[in-house]
Image (cartoon, rainbow, N blue to C red; front, side):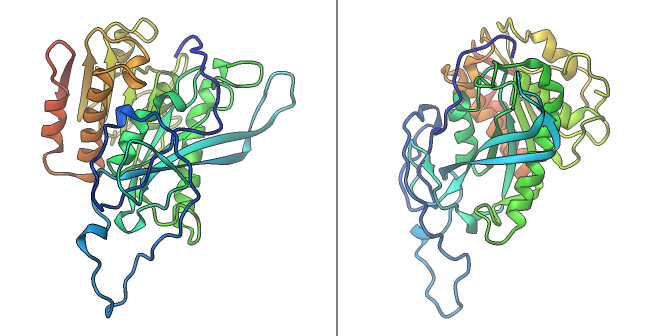
Length: 349
């Protein structure tokens, strides 16, 4: 994203109450604005002795919509450095906001450090990159919608491009961000594989997707399709008003290329439609292009309705199709992406 939006980095991010299928109606994730904090409870064991009575159906881990837990961790990549204005180079610090399916009734709030629904996992992982001069916070409703649908969603704060970077956001660090994404994937998969970690058993390492908006979309695009940054663990990519990183080579969709979903506002003047066409037209199938008619650069992914709701439904159906193999997911995606006067979906499955 070119040009600051003016959002400050926040220490507490929107949080949501956790769900394991004991009833309760799921509120629209697009209305998530409340912040509810609580101390984490003690997770129930994932195994039940054979002699024990079966839990009633109301209390067994269920499918989506889940409640959403949220926690923030700090990851340090000592193998690479970042240079803040007026300071010596330092290891790259990636504050990462993680949303995940959690226990409890699904509500319109996220809950801090809520116990995860581990027995219903492991869940696919989605890495999300924020745009220039913002943080993951403005995208909270969209990221929470993915977690509610049964995904672990991790959004790192890029060291120099975020709104509160020392000395101000600096877009020159963009070429370093694809490695940031791969580093976060590695650390989260390791945490999930480590018994006793808060994320233990929560992530399926065989089902990983990357996504991002604007500069974050450029970052995700490189991780999925640029041979110099390629991460073969990625199984699907969702690029929201993104583009190729300027001046970078290696962008050639090495086979086998993950399925691609691109979204683009037709009135976007920051990353115009031609930027998306440049990579979408040469991408191999399966690929999909969601055109948001008359939509700008940032609003459809942060709060502009009904566009945000359309993006939520299309992206979730895409993830369900290519990370979960859910029956009917492709049909849902095609239906959600065709809204007269608002959206059109081009598909090449």
